[in-house]
Amino acid sequence: MNVVGKIITMWGVLVFAAWASPQFAAINYFGTGFTASALILWTVVMAITLVATYKYMPGAMSNNVVKLWTIIVVGGMILNYANFMQLVPKAIAPYIYFHAWLALTAIGFALTALWWTPKSKMIFTAGAALNALLLVVTFLNIPFVAMYGLLLAGIVGGLPAVLDGVLNYNTPKSAHAPAAKPAVSVKVTIK
Image (tube, rainbow, N blue to C red):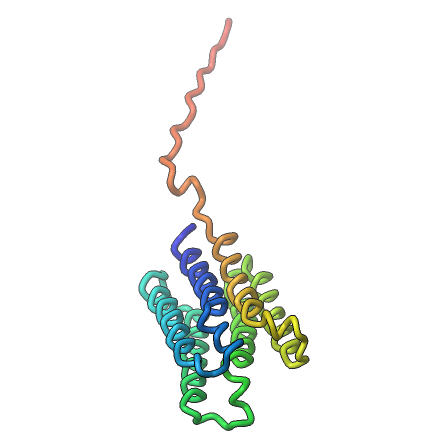
């Protein structure tokens, strides 16, 4: 897998791991007293992904998809911290930590499908649709979704990136192998 594939896969794995973490589960099951530790975890995960992307991905500074995800991550984090400091209207505050990230991820995946490589289009289109679907379903208060919402968010937020990184960025074997010597042919003529 080349460096772009590794970075994209890293994003997916870390996003899944954060959503599936005990910090996020504690908020879901025990209340908002665990919000600070979840915010710290999410901040660390987002910082790792952004720093690695800009440090190791060739052309990251001029890539529109990288800029898009930088805006989404920074904007989402500002929204999270504004909510934590109670600067967000109380009517929308309960929807910031979970619902807003589903919406941001759906938008990000949809634009990634438009701007990224053609072979990645289907994966990110499906990711956008799954995030949007999960967002809609969360408002229906279905017990299964309420119980496993964080895990589902990790799957629909992380799996598309992992699939794209693993399936679409394999370095061809010939790039690592020495060039093959041309075969010698011998032409025999009988008179």
